[in-house]
Length: 387
View 1: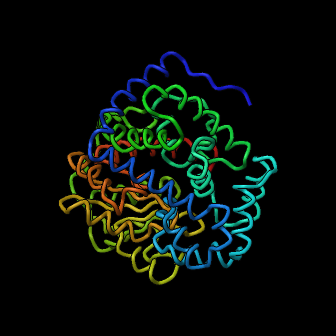
View 2 (view 1 turned 180 degrees about the horizontal axis):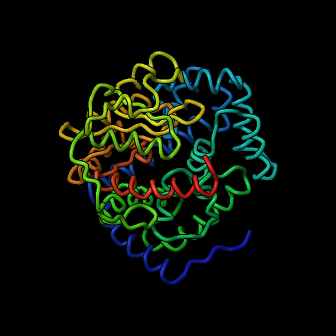
View 3 (view 1 turned 30 degrees about the vertical axis):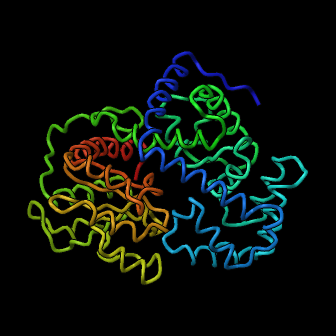
């Protein structure tokens, strides 16, 4: 594995943020985050110590997994643990493979790949969280935080596919470990001694720095331009353009507001589906039916859920969306630009904080611009490639 090296500019930018990070650590928010990380370290090390792994019964394992940060991805944690972990693998296999992964004598890459192959339901975020807290001096956490923070800081020190598609094996994980080790070493004079300190730094960038970036710059460095024609100034208008945009991008679009109209068109007629496809059990179906707009893929599974907040409080939209947090869908609030700061503030609440990377905010102006750009692309695609 080739050695990663930072440029002078990358090093300077890192140290600039690290200096601000030291001031942030003095705040109640910074101190609380450090405590949360170190308490989590103690808990994981205790529960998965060599002598305690074998003692875990189903209830203890269930409680342990619920405490992992990655478990916040799932709304119904008990269902996931019972059906995707214990039933599929058996508790004895999980404990046996965890022990080999953490304390085995074989080459680490082989141990990682063997665990990933033999234990279903543990993705890279779960595996690396455990490794990270058992051995913070050796291993890093690889989840949405570094995947978001590194591109934001211009640290193109890992293959792009790691950010777009994730990592797939132990060798790729060790590339991530090596890259983050370089960053950690660069920041050692700022109190970052292990990967837990580094994760606290990443959380500072993720939660405090990125949300405060200029609003005229959109993620990945693409500037947003004001729309020249479309003006969205109502709840119905936003839903109309979401439905039309979904169709243009090849989704099956649905809206709860079937009878509402925009410019003489009933929204139920603009949508491609009038009823929610049967993608889940009745509990999830009931929650989904109340969401303003949903884009379904060709397999009739939801990919994007939109809540339009024109005059209502954003928190109501977030609470509706979070009902489906155990499904792998994107949650998007669509609202006037002046509601963006309220959206960012709400994501700091406990119930949203650990899955904040799955939420997006799109202003009316951004929605209009996206729609205007999608139309010529669609027309060109049809002309050149056909339907």
